[in-house]
Image (cartoon, rainbow over all chains, first blue to last red; front, side, top):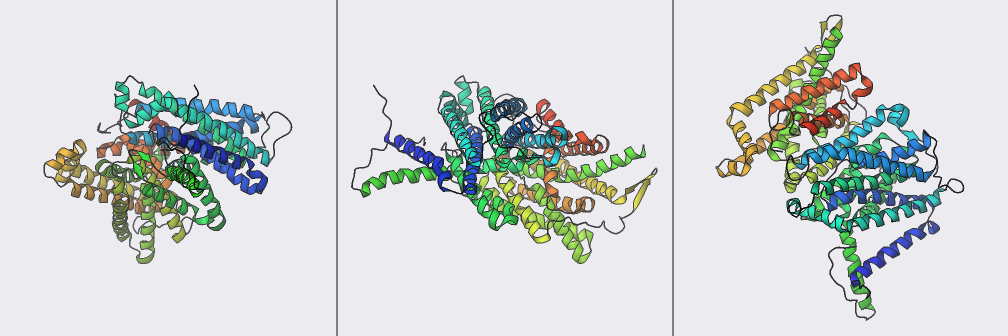
Length: 354
Length: 286
């Protein structure tokens, strides 16, 4: 017997499919600098979605997610520029290994002091520790100059070699970002909608009860931290090829700020929330970079303040732009068929979102 | 030998600047439960306000007082309009205050320009003390003196006064303290204002050493966080110990092994987090 999907899920899947096709076809209609903006949205969206795994699903707020972003960017750049290995895939693999290793190492002191149970202390220490991780790595990148290029970082990362033909051009890079983004998003979606992902949500709601049910919550949080780190690292690799430079700033608070701003802007109740936040953020950043370059930190700070004060928040979850867009879409799905005088599809409230 | 003494004194004056900042940070956090990551930006704002007052009326002490009062007012306004609505939501307070810090830094840059302003030491404190063959500015000894004075006052307040007793009781069990009929809100507001004022004082006092520039608070904020974690929250002597450890380590590191010194403090931070998460002298409340 075939499985039947609720109509609401089909509607959402259709929306995702349509958006994916539009994004895929965009470079045919847009000039290159516009499509590179879309590529930036995808990279930041991937970065913020990886933070959402821990912040939104497992309720592990981190102010140092850029540690993994920078680790990915630096390991790919070092492989290309210092070791001369030009293959993009080897760089990606190396970056995944490095960011997973860094996440595994940093996770041990971090989760020693975070959570419920023996030896646990206030989450504030965890927050301070995550700030420390990013700053520590950025200082490290400044210090070991021969490997990392010191405080100016490294520039001139060449275009990616995919192993066949010559290096890809900007338009092909767009499709590379799109492909890797789709694969990563699909993997994260599957992870978060598996037994494991529901266990993370359980930890979010009541960690003590999860422990009483026999879950090793420490292991769940620790592994989710590593998973988030790996996807953050992949976003870093894409970013390093995107801008063809790496800087110590990629590790620092300035980059972490972006990741949690996108999570809060987009909302944590919907998987695609951070992506919506990313579209919004990159758009504003682009406009501001044209008209108000000097006031950008002011605008950025104001977006943070407005996002945190205005985003509806209940039960430790943000309902930002992502749920808003979802509601709008579901409303359209109800209203538009009615305009043609057809009966609307039977919608089942799922609450889970896309 | 005299080189080591001068470095030690430098470290000491640095440690007391850190102490002023960390004491304010840990008071606002310990008593109000507010994670204020804009503390560094407020310190910077204090330095600029002080600089402006000195430029117009040439009164160092007046500048200290004005900066302290201005910062207390600004800090309380931030609390009233923003932080109050995020009660008990520590990560959100962190995010909010990061945004506020960015705004403050950019507004200061807008008003006073991006370049660094130098600030003269007050009259009578511009001289140099000779240690062996090396000179050491009197002003830095004065900073140490101010730091010791503030430490003594805070320590006295914590251990010997009614306010201190209420604060300690509130940290142990806030609900019980309130139910005994103590006006904990009033005391915590006072302590919050005190913490903000300390940031302003630190700004004016530190500016003649480092100069005033819009990003002067960023690095100090990070060191302040390290000091608070290393020293532990809840006791003023813990904050002092943390400030001494980090200030001296950082200064000696920069003087003797400058390559490694950049992340020396972070390594200490991680070690403390692993081995003794409550800090060197700290309550187990967090």
